[in-house]
Image (cartoon, rainbow, N blue to C red; front, side, top):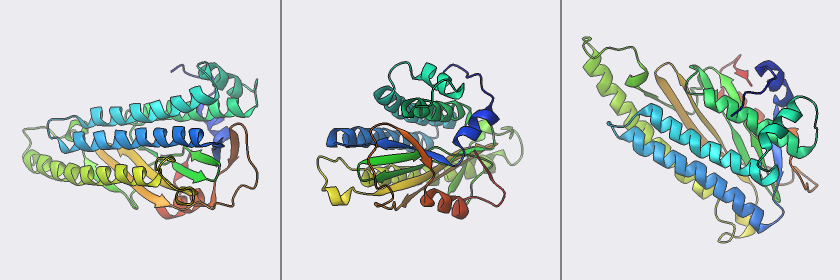
Length: 271
């Protein structure tokens, strides 16, 4: 992905405390949203398999999860903006465009830019909220400086550690790391199933069973310690009293603010 000219603080200020609202006026639009969320679930399932495998690389597992999220975001960008979404994002961030499609391009391109850094930059956490409403959904792609501990599970990655194999406690460290990875794999698999249950196929689910709801999730790294978490949240079905025809930047939901209070340590910097 091309590096955009705007500096991170300048880009962040455009989207801080904001979410992107996407129209879902038809079953076909809902189906695309459903498929995107299932791509995210598939990424968690594959990550769970790799984290549980002592022969697999945690770094590679995280890379594969990133690729699923990237595909999900790029599918949304291509659907609403087109193949030239990077140049549209650039135009939005340079103040040359202000329409909803350009805002979407800027918002998700910024998220992808930060996601690319997530596992190469220690002490950064992805903390998104995805909410489903009648005829629309919102994506709040937040990032946090620091590790999120509440409501999460931590696991250790020896490949990211400075512990040498010949050190006296190396065997104990590796054994405890494998145990933490096994626990994390079970959590990741359960999280994947929760996403599938939360965002069912609209062709097979009554409207009142998929009308509103969402998830908040966490994944990140601090040194050799990785973090994962997911929780189902409710969404107010009456929040929006209008329909939108194109993506729109909106204020983050009360659900998002609540998760910040409940999940984040005091003084955490939310991007």
